[in-house]
Length: 343
Image 1 (cartoon, rainbow, N blue to C red):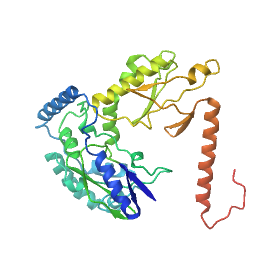
Image 2 (image 1 turned 60 degrees about the vertical axis):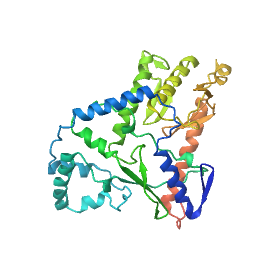
Image 3 (image 1 turned 90 degrees about the vertical axis):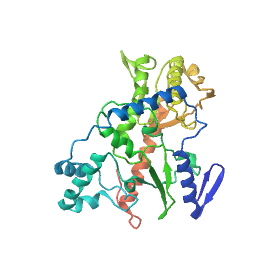
Image 4 (image 1 turned 90 degrees about the horizontal axis):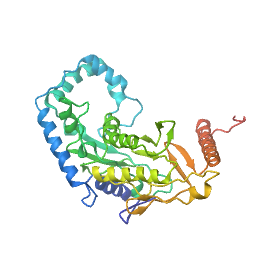
């Protein structure tokens, strides 16, 4: 097993250091990143203004009923945190533990500050198929390092969320070993309860820009020029010029917000049309100064997309059969043998 990070190869017990170096570099702002400095300075001024506005605002005290409801709403079966604690520990500790949590949470709300002990993140990377290069393992830019938008955060919660993303550290767990902690200056908090909602605030402006531009695919007068889940976005257009407009908007937004689009995942899939097949397959798109790779197959939101409807059906049926077969093998177990036909 081998991992390559910035041209250096890590093997066996040294792989954990390679992952630690990779994730540490992702969590540190790269001075070479293209960024709109003027816009960034305006954002920083907005942050300071909002901090002053909410400085004296308090958060409503939490009740024991709210604590109980919050605990029950957390998904079970998740891996333990840095301290070895899981949600099951809290659930099965009983009502006395829940009562002890009330004054602790109220203290956090009152001071708008969270202990740095609770900010230690744990990353557990998994080798992907034929991906020994660390570039395959990405983190996204932190919400609090980018354009803050007040929206629904209009009281002391702002201070709390800001503090939650400051002085954060993370470690890498690999084959039972823990790496040295490294500072996290940017990057989505993996597994964080608020991460999804905060990222929606971050990316929603770009999605609104897609809608208002009028470019791209439509069903009647309804714009369906994009499908998105978090940072996984697909742009859809019948017209190559309009498709390029949408791509340019994505590129400009990345420049404005100061994050990098991953070149290997920013690709073009030219869908064949029986009457315009030759025209469709010859389209070339630009991501900034560079040509976007034109590919025959890509996966978006877990669904395989190809250059034709027939190809879509074949690829997805084959993949579903493969998944079903693997699931059946897991159910049978290593020492079991199937004696009946599975249908």
